[in-house]
Length: 408
Image (tube, rainbow, N blue to C red; front, top):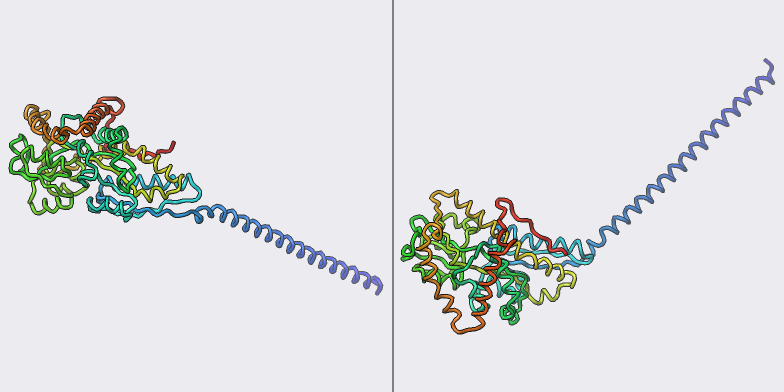
């Protein structure tokens, strides 16, 4: 091979090597440009996602918090508080979040508040919302005393009784006016179910003479009068005091519905259940401070009003369930007994009812307004207790009723 030929081959090899190196460098640059381009695209996507996330979260962070205090005399463990009141608060909170863009409700809850202090707390603004009843504040709502008196009424269950009470308020302007002089805005009414005498062991009642010498706790003035007329000694006191007296063995029983042995701890003391629906009716209401209510945004007030409209029925159903639940709880206690004098001794039971007949007449006297309230109450009690679908409704124990949203 000549020198010229070798030199030419060497040049071709060098040229080939250089071309390959150049192509390698160009490919690397291209890859870097692609990586850079991909990186820029990824960064753009991340920024876009961040903007979207911030846009989604902005309304929540921008919402104005409405802080509300809720107070009740019920203990936190009782179904009325643990299920009923919490459902009411949650329903309102959930709807405000879902149906408004600017607001959210934040609740602070107070349980076991002395009943006599609740209304003062609402009026003064210490609490924004509270639950109580006319019977816990005698004289403040005088016309509501009438429906709590004993009488020949159906008083079928807490559901029909709650509907009766709410309708009574709505149809009687005289009852509505009793709130006008207060600083409270009515949310809604509801009611207990029929009454029972719950007695400690050895203090059972089978006939009217058995009331003699016994001390029985009363929740309102009407129950005081009923217990006295039947022959026992009434103790007019809040449940907290009654529990102390039971513990000290200073009282023999209580006139109330059957949810209390479980919800308030009365099952530690009472064993005998005596059905006496004629004897008892306790009215409850939920109220809000007027200034608080008026200060709510219009769209929030609308939600509150819609929820309130469906809660008398729901609370009535829930209480009917709770009273059945309390009775089932009682059945498991050693020494339990159940007596229904209207079925087992109707003649004697009729004497119980007749002996208290004069109480409502005394309350009415010659007052035309009181008579109108009582007559309308009896009319509505009969209607809801005998007219389907109200009269045919039955509780769902052990399944709790479903809380309504009130959404239209």
